Image 1 (cartoon, each protein chain N blue to C red):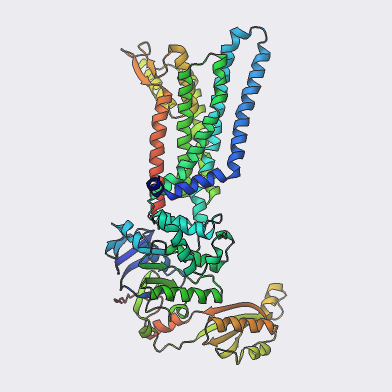
Image 2: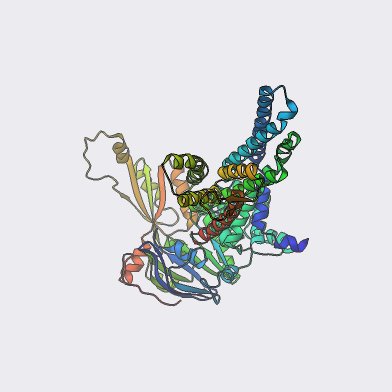
Length: 336
Length: 295
């Protein structure tokens, strides 16, 4: 379905995407995971024919991205990381406009708009201006846009980026529904935990190189299915740890010193503020709903939460298993 | 009708709708027409007051002066207004993250470019059309022929075409609308004001520069006439001066007294300008489409 051969994109002398060769079969959900700046977005933009590769080629559904960009666009739907909407268009106008851009006959557009908005659960927002929709709703509206020409391949760039836990769950359900409709999905993420259940296959990318690919189950076997949530807060450490323990999904909670080895007589106000800030790492096995409940519980208990975020250390765990690192120079690639 | 509706570029339809729904467009129309009207009225009143006695004898002179003033004002206003409609066209799409979405559709980069350029150029064309009744007043006073007016209209329209496409091209290569604005107006200032000053002072400078051979002088004259066709102000000035001298609007004849054995016939600067500006418009639109495709 998707076959890339030595796909390379240079920016000056630097390779943003470095000789990526991969085969993705029809019906797969392929998750491309890697840190910020790994080249995932550029790779996806090349597949979507938005950027020409410097070297190499990719064949999507039998059409080369270099020679038959129009044919590739007919069978792919691209969802960028940042949602672009025309703020002065209603949700229905927005989908109808892109249906026209994809050459959907005018007679079919109204039915299509209704069907797609119902699919992404935005039927009630049909006449709402796109600029007034929440971030999660805009994401779903953009997903509806990618489906206007009924593409068989979806290229989703970090689809859960910037969404709250509830919106992430909804989006996840939507992607699973699209998968059940037979779509081939390529999606990117910075967090393995976010995509490992969703994807049939995974690839790990760093510094423009595809370090390893394989079936999701194989790659993640042996990796404990929990992740670490880092919480920064003001207040009593013991009390905060007490409130966290015994909550759904929490395996362990421990505090981490934030500002060590600092002179005690420092009078700088910001340093004093930092000294009052505490950090706790929670080993967590719950889902996003549990994480949302945990945050709500902490706030209700009077803990002054400054930040609540997942730490991405699963990538290093997987690469460690295969004697690789995100700085690895050797490329290990395979077909999926 | 249905087939036509299916085949029309949807982005062009959207852009045309956006332009006509934008209240700022009507403000520009009012300010533009008010400025042209104010210039015409003040100039007419001034000329009438300075020549109060012989109304009939001087009316053609008043008409000619009014014509030059109105055409000059329109060239300057078109320079100011035309790029303003396009400098934000691509940067705005980039800022709101919709350019990639358009590029991912079946619209080609040239369709995207034309959808951005046609409404802006159409709006300027509408502005020029709206001033026709006002410039038509000079025919009541006399002193101006219809062909002169057509030549002026040709210069103004060609300038509008180039300046809108220049704004669009700079917009496609800029990161922000402010960058595009600064670069476009700097280029235009050099192209219109700088070149006009250079061209209009060049004959005086070359005359004061000492002796020149006949061949050198004639080559300089040919160069001057051709270069005059690259600037709307000098193109109009030289075309009009030549028309008054030889009653020939379409060509400029040089020699044989200027070092040529036989007279040399060159196209009038307004024709050179129209051809060069339209060719430059096509090149800039093509470059814009290319930039949209690769960036």
